[in-house]
Length: 541
Image 1 (cartoon, rainbow, N blue to C red):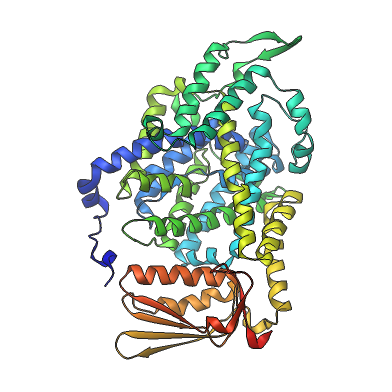
Image 2 (image 1 turned 60 degrees about the vertical axis):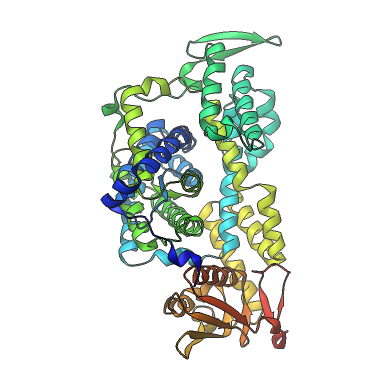
């Protein structure tokens, strides 16, 4: 029996609060320090008022935490939605008009996600090939970097499209506002430097707070709170607090606003709804699944319940002027590292944000935009770092093809088309490898019990991303404490996505006191030595 099977799980709901309020309050407070600047930056990068990010974070913490199907996941605005929200605001008229129209799209998207959760569609997020999803996230990271780099230097770029922004990088550098750029560059150097700090007091303070405090200090030295001009290297530059500092209402009641539902007839409105729904749904499922792997108590989220929760939260947030709510992996990882035990850490992080904005909104208005832009550039880099490309290539050339296809098409068009292109290439590769059309959406598998403690799952023909949901029905029937034999000897082809899911299943089975044995893998030729690489049966070569 696995050691993890003897772990005593923390109580949930009010009993969990009584048991673990000390650790959950501490983690919630630390996460508040992280979420506050990030929520502000995400909102502004999305073409929305800073307060929209605060509203989304409050709804995620105060409401979604109590109705979700997960335990230590943190809900709120996420960088992954920046490009779809910004595109929506621009597509639907820009400025205030685009903002209020996008709020309507957020509300409708939230309702769709809520209904999808009720229909038990949480597992649909696992339909998409892993490398296409990674390509989607990497393309989001690239766009965030390209969009926020000019803001970090105090420049308003003449273009909005990613490729044009890339070509205009020399223009951006040449026209940087020195004092604003100094704040942004200092913020970036702090973020980079802190990655090398492994211990000490600095390691215990959230990086975004260190950045914001340092940026506010330098901003004060540069008198960014007053309108003025200054000379540098023979040129004059302007400082305007309305353009270089965060602006939130000091009276919280004036921060709330509603959606413009008349936008439903506008060209591009339903594209916005679909884009927001796709990214929000996929990211929520991915984040919750990732948190399940990190949770020291090995608890599993109810993905469909989580979809409904973030959907309802997003609909409410959109109705009062806020960003969509999502399950956010970086803050959730920090939550676990902080020692959080229950959903109450999520609640407390939203509660602390609410109290801070209620009592100290004027302090937010001294935060330089360039420091928040630096936070987002750094976040974008983590989504699209060279390591992400290397890790994908290590799995196999076809994963690199899917990954790069998704990125290139997304940058050239938009996110929906990019994801569709990646999925289409994946289907084409499978067909070229001999996978028949009738095998693409239905797995051929047999589940047999052998004795009282062993279950054999025999997988025949092709096991690929698009038929994994039908294969998962067999996996779901297997009791957690059994010995499982995964017989792959008759599988003609197994793709990376299925191999990844099978490895996850094996880990979960072992954590619950069972075991997993693979049979027949020696009859396959793997694309690379990576354990989850695609593999084809030798007889089919």
